Amino acid sequence: MSDPEVLTEIKKVAPAKKVGLLGGTFNPPHVGHLIIAEQVRDQLGLDKILFLPSAEPPHKREKKTIDSKHRLAMLEKTVMDNEAFEIDTIELQRGGKSYTYDTIVALKEREPDTEFYFIIGADMVEDLPNWHNIEELVSLVQLVGVNRPNFTTESPYPVIMVDVPDIDISSTIIRQKVLDDCSIRYLVTQETEKYIESERLYKDEEKE
Image 1 (tube, one colour):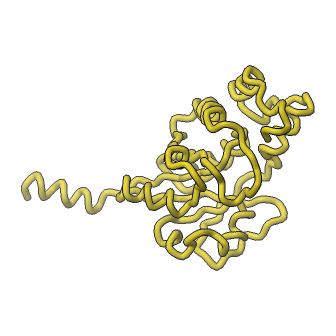
Image 2 (tube, rainbow, N blue to C red):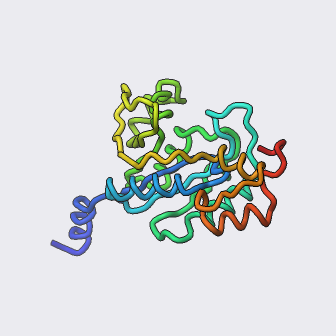
Image 3 (cartoon, helix red, strand yellow):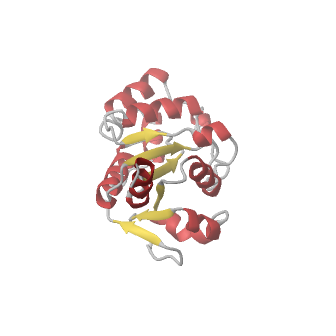
């Protein structure tokens, strides 16, 4: 068998790259995001996790977020210590509402041989019937659900459930603590906390 034929056969049997996707506004990113990403990566044997900061989330109507430059900067500081974590700004570059379907289509066009695993909370599992182009979406990507207190994990769509520790941390809670001059130490990474303090983020209630 010639070299080109050998390479063709290797490509046929070589496993596809397995990449997890974790989207969100990350306003701000916190240790809960890191725990979810690491647990899913480890339990499903993924090669890496891509964090996808959204431009304008379709599921959070009438909710303002701070400038994307700050969200991206915080996310960079949050994931910097894990070589298996990367950031993809595909949704920020596209702008507008960040529909998961559009993002997955673009990623599959860019990396046709990659198997993508899109991570969602149990609250989103319940809402899947209302997602944009959900029938087409589940044919393109494997959905991965992570448990959250008081939400069901049942769905008419194929969802792999991954058990992660129930840690009740949210970006909303962190923003409120900053506004109330309370400590956010250990809720976010040290570098992220420093950035929030230096930029005086979330001090103005109007920008939440």
